[in-house]
Image 1 (cartoon, rainbow, N blue to C red):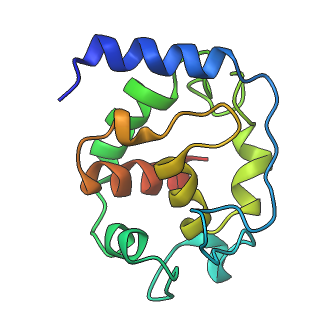
Image 2 (image 1 turned 90 degrees about the horizontal axis):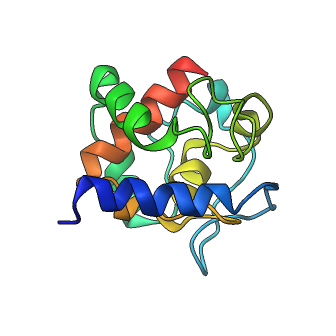
Length: 141
């Protein structure tokens, strides 16, 4: 496991070098057919398949919003990334980006990174952490 300080330093470096970001149609893991359109019901996930076994397994987990908030605060809310409000960082404004992606697309971005955003596999050490953080972001922003 990577030390928390090293993770934060690498996350800060990645975020500070990414002043522009925009979603791309069909964004997702290489070779996947993930949709970037919002899922029915506001992207709440559910039983729909992402056509990716790893993402389907993560989204099937029951999220804990309190843990998700902790994950967000220590990883995503860093000022060079998204900021604690999801708006005031170098990363994309959550108010603009979140409606453009369903949970499959957002999880693919979290797992693979995108346009200067690092893969959060360097930050979150369990599938449950990914599920919790995504649920918190959906609920809060």
